[in-house]
Length: 78
Image (tube, rainbow, N blue to C red; front, side, top):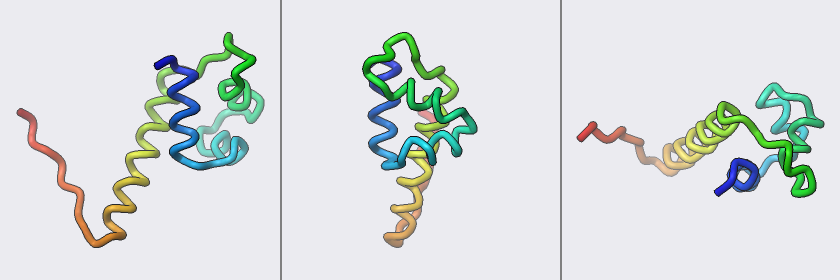
């Protein structure tokens, strides 16, 4: 999946409007909007932004699991 495709998939998973996402990523709204736009193929989100969005999605998943009364236990390294 391309970086732009991954960005849009993560944005959909997070379920946030672009303005709120831009604020959380500490990036200008216009830049975040260009990353999401299919017509602006030259504007690709950097790897650190994708990593931050993945961490945000993971943290929200952990919060949902904890809210259901379970605990998240990290796997031991093999």
